[in-house]
Image 1 (spheres, rainbow, N blue to C red):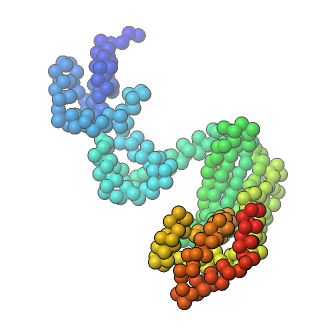
Image 2: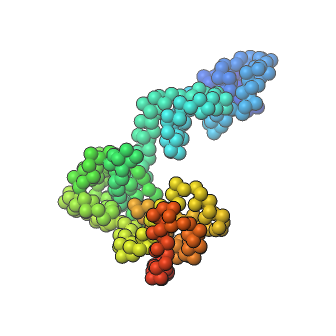
Image 3: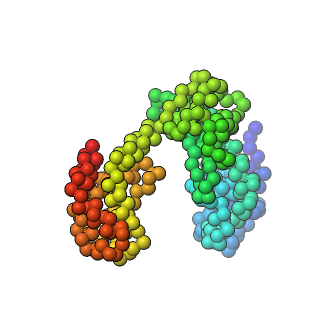
Length: 356
């Protein structure tokens, strides 16, 4: 069916000026969000010269108000949903919308108003979650899969479990995909709660998800994880349970640390010497400007203790020279460190661990 003369005229107008689009066979300004008469070109030109249109044009908001691919008008609801998705995927807390600078930026640079935190959480976050889970189901459909569960504690000491899933494939581009499918707070970190969380994680993928496609279960070597895996294999006989190699390496590091007590004491006493003492830190930086401050390893962070050993093996003499400037009476940590630095076997052990 041939296009009407009216529609032909409208298409010609929007092809010449991207500030307009067609809506219900009417001319619509995407910047000002209002209908514009197109019976005469004078009306269109008058609208373009208007103050409001000129300001919006100067602020380059046309890309925000209009999807250039299909001339689809982006509504306030579309904007709120896209904003929510952006904040969620970039780890920006939704409460940041309470910040006046955030909301004023949105008002200044977009034709939209800043949505409320409650609106994003109650309306859009749920729909984004549903869309994300649908996308994950589509990407893993028909594939053989692995699942990994790990438990940690948050800032207030609550137990939180996370389940990550991926595809078992020789194709690198396919195998490198990782999907967080579930996060949940646990009453207690034990085998029964982990097994229950495993089941809930698979159920989150829908009733039509083929659980027999999950062939590998990866965890750390904690006893309750092993016990949970044993219970899971009762209901999922095709699953093979393996413990994380990184956790095994951490156990090796812990064994090394336990066998070299004097090195561990040196690292701890040096750490105590500089913590909360700016004057000693300043002395160190003045004497050794090209060397970083001694590291402060955290035992629960895998490998940080070995990194500290590497540091002391490389900079042992520099540490000795710095501590010669400190008086033993200043603190017990300095006195302990000086005694350890005089131990001839300690330096040899540092080098041996480093070279090994």
